[in-house]
Length: 144
Image (cartoon, rainbow, N blue to C red; front, side):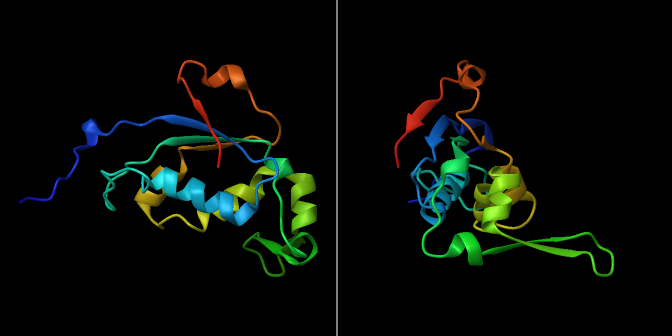
């Protein structure tokens, strides 16, 4: 019996909307990364982009457990000497709440051209998000 390999034009992609309110960051990021890669589908193939489109709303209300709000650090490096900036999660959440989810998911994606293509199917909104924008894609709400 031969192994089934889906062709690129046979892969069906759906749109899902995930509400991040009250969700733990790491557990949410694992679910999102798996869906972007397509690991939830029976036709999953590691070298093909089988994943779905994910829209995350209410990113500012995601939960960090323990003392991660004060202790977890995010780094930016400008490329210049002394250009390393470190910020804790509370500061990052205040300035750019979508970065928490984007960084967590990006760390779980494969590195390279395929991983970047899969990560491009993620949309993150700090607030409730533009519901009208994804009406034509018939996005379905997903409860995790």
